[in-house]
Amino acid sequence: MLRINTRSVQILGQQISHRRLSELSLLIFMMPALVLVIAFVIVPAAWAILISFTNQSLIGPNARNFSFIGLENYVRLFNDPGFWNSLGTSFIFVFGSAFLGQFVIGFSLALLLKYAGVLSRGIVGGSVLLAWVIPEIVAVYIWASVLNFQSGSANQILLAFGLEKQRWLIDMPLLSIIIVNIWRGTAFTMLLFSAALEAIPDTLYDAASVDGASRWERFRYITLPLIRYTILLDFILITMGTFSVFGMVFAMTGGGPLGRSEIIGVYIYRNAFEYREIGYGSAASVVMLIINLTLALVYLRFTRVEWSAEA
Amino acid sequence: MHRSGNSLLLRLSEYGFYLPILVFFFGPISWLVLASINSDPGSAWQIPEQVTLNNYLQLVTESDLLLWMGNSTTLAVGTMTVTVILATLAAYPLSRVPFPGKGVFMYALLLARVMPITAVIIPIFSLSVQLNLVNTFTGAILILSAMQLPISLWIMKSFVDSIPIELEESAWLDGCNRLTGLIRIVFPLMSPGVAVTGLFAFLAAWGDFLIPLIILRSPTTFPIAMGLYRAFGDQGSVDFGFLTALSVLYSVPSILLYLFARQYLVKGMTAGSVKM
Image (cartoon, rainbow over all chains, first blue to last red; front, side, top):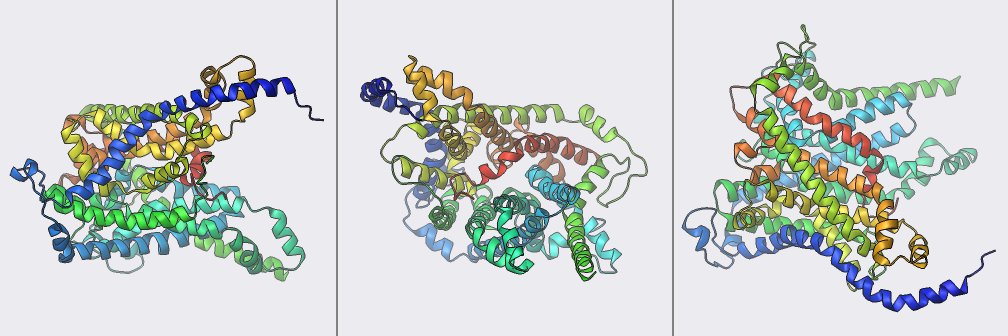
């Protein structure tokens, strides 16, 4: 039986009004974190918008004495084939590596490994994870060697099958960075779906088997409906994640040759830090921000934050 | 009979799927490890004819390895410390104190978390120039911490959410005030959250390439990522032994720490999202 201690309820009641004040004063603990996030995340976003309307440069006279030039950067941006190329490249990069690669392989692996033995789970799952956890620049170095024309292992395999050697990074740079990004990012999808599948009670499958449901029917009518939110969540997260990739592509191909693997992040970097036009580069940044914000708003639709103060 | 034949076929087709997966995912890593212990390493995949540890020994004697390692450690430990302290402080009011606009604030944190850092790298650089933070670890650590905080706040808040308020209420009845209750009851129970956010922050800073590329431009401030990038960027003088050994050494802490953080990976990946 639950017995309510009336005296302690009274004490609590008296304390509540006092506490409301001290409660609000606790908000001060949030300040340091807030200041840092505002300074290095929020202010830069606003700043990018502001300088995208200027002719500011990285060095030289226009670094300090820049002026507002209205929409000039945007007009130039939208007339630059290089910019449209970078958007197209980004799109193919995201579609190829996130959807066709990471999702398909990661999802299949999660399904297969759920019923696999400890050994395959450890070896196959472990290898996929390993590719994800090593530092980005190590992944670049490994793949630069694997795709090496002279004696890299990719060409070793082609030769073993009687095929011709390929100049991967020169003739198919976009395909190369897509392959590397599949290698690197598949673990994310695999982990996400492994957790989602783990959460489905076995009893559901047992009951369906008793009723004579086939393997495919169990997947179609039990698994799929239960993980549809995970599928959406995964799509959005890997799309945003892949759209934000920079270091791997920058270090691997530098966007080349001739811009054929230049995703938007590399385009921004090149204009700002190589051509030193930070006003113009920022205009491209703003476009990237808008695209990501759109994706992020879709993402937030699937979050479960409550708008109330009790969140 | 038919059933077992069927499942045997299924087994075989499973292995048929595993084999290319294994070659694709593990092949490149096996090349790295094998080349690092090969006395005559190259870009081809090969079993070493002569196994040696000279590539590793060479690291210590012939390069800036100690400098780079020290710099990477400074970055990672600094980012971890700043992130953990700030997130721990902020998590309690975020979880317990109702304030207007809190829902919006938590949403804004999610937005900040998924913002591509490349899109704000120009202002981050300009800001660092203004504040004299270029080529300083302070600058790199502050930026990396700011990037890490949104997710850390979400994770930490969820840890505080899971501490029953009754524990605190009984402490208040025993004479604790809000602050002493926080220190004596809540902080100790937050230690798993501290461990997780700390690990994530360490790993993010340890493996980061973009912020060092922009902020740490002087060779004396290079972390391992920059040292490695510059070393294999120097065309024509590719020293496979040196680079592979360095890569392995650089990857080991990441791999070990991920093993510790494994059970929290999904929680971190999906913070703020639909419960699965």
